[in-house]
Image 1 (cartoon, rainbow, N blue to C red):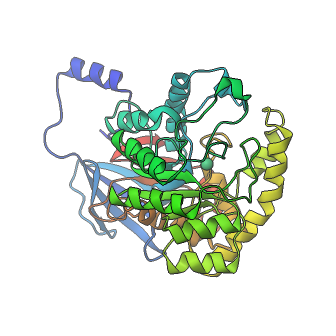
Image 2: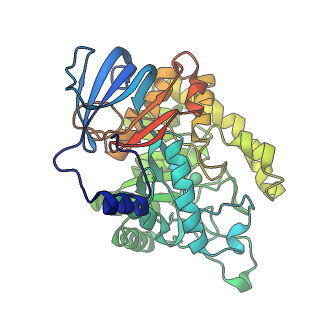
Length: 427
Ligand SMILES: [Zn+2]
């Protein structure tokens, strides 16, 4: 029997009825019609992937011996790849599309929303995500529940609350001062930011996220204006790297991008107003750029109906085209660009829609897939376990019935999803 996902409650029931458990390793074979090697960019025909428990044991050719009676998953007419990775998600969140839902629903409700969103993300073929900013350490609870097998979802690297200046993009600024509204990660000054990093690490952060500039969806911030001083950014990076945590900086404006790169961050999120100097600085310092070039489609179509204020719709319009030009520039100059979509701005599960924009903005289809596999894995420091179908890696495998190298929009509709050797979706 293939190991197919069932809710833990049901599995308990089945075991109780049959009274049996499996002993020894569970071995499954996948026959892959086309297998994309994300590291070389080449496609192998009629490959056989051998999976033992949650890991890939071997990848061989069509003559790989398969013992009689083995579990075989036949994807011989499919295009097979490693599970996709989204490096900029906000999975914890409310299920209704009301921009101000957070003022009327508790953070606990948002956490339950996260459980639903995590499953949608996984079923869209994204077996690993980096979640950059969540209040109340709810992202860690979700990550831990997924890792414990209690709820289905992608592997998660999480930041906890994003750090930001008082009144900045990472703060909450909608209510008047009498409400004393303040986001969890707000810290001003080098020692205060160090304390906040330490607090995030204490509660289980895998990385640090901070806001280096204003942003699109905050009240009263200018997208192009720098927040945090160089001294504060250096303190955030130094403290995070001391604890072996990588740093993601939200940065739209050119000056803020450069300041964050100089401070030593590992990735620039959004990177909307890049110039050649900023890209060169990123290449020299091995900084990865993560540009969310799809979500404006959703914001401009549905934002008003969802209650997004005009101020924010306007900022989105000012940024969108320029960000796509920055994407093209970064790709052309050979910078590292990882796939990240800002899910939550648009509905979870549509993460694959950005691939078409990546190709339209200068990547080859192979590069676009690599940005969401090997490049993303390197950004996480997980290049030894995810992002490739290779021996020793997690058995995180997805498949589509068409060829995404010819039509990248195939990745908007993933037909097969396996994570850690367990099948979550098979059409
Ligand atoms: Zn974001």
